[in-house]
Length: 262
Image (cartoon, rainbow, N blue to C red; front, side, top):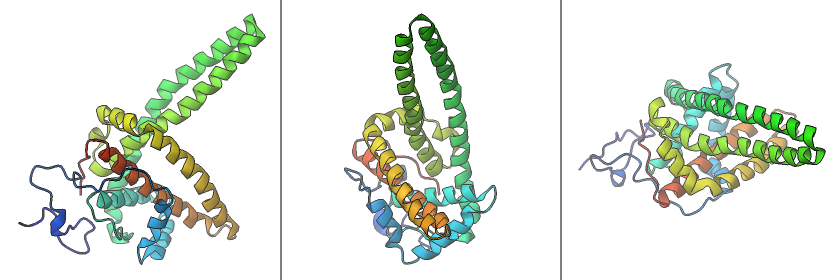
């Protein structure tokens, strides 16, 4: 029986016979599972390809293209996740300027979903912030001690408002990047299921990437600032693999596979 996917070696989606997906089975159900996040491997993963230097340099050049560069780079990273999710992750596909249009198409959906989700979150958060300040003002007018207590809870509220959107954004962008479909990205049942199964790992990932990226970018900046842009790309690629690992762990816990659009 032949594979559902093309076998052209230049196509990053081509699959060997063992990667066959039975008819009717959503592409992605054969994604390799894992039980936990291997944080440092996310950086080591970048160097598995023999062409990692070329990929890093071309990605850096793409990043500095005005307006569309960042979107194209996002599209490439989600294509990497898509290929990994189909069991063809070693080595990951090299960056190819010939697929500029495909990267742009995939990246646009992630950008639009992120933009709309961000606006929606701001609409929800803004009234909370306004109400919080009003309550603090009222509390201070009644009793300064109440004002201090109110400020403490307000700070906790702000911390929660900064963390919760990141929880929601990961499953939204994963669905947008893999399905290349705006409507399918906003599957809130999937978002709820993902966050309920992965919220601890999402916190740890956020902490790890915040700290590690600081050191990586700082090291790039020491190189007369010339290495700062490749360092940023390296961090983005590491985060790409971290996102894939989150998806793997989610599936291992009984999560629902995402349909992967080629």
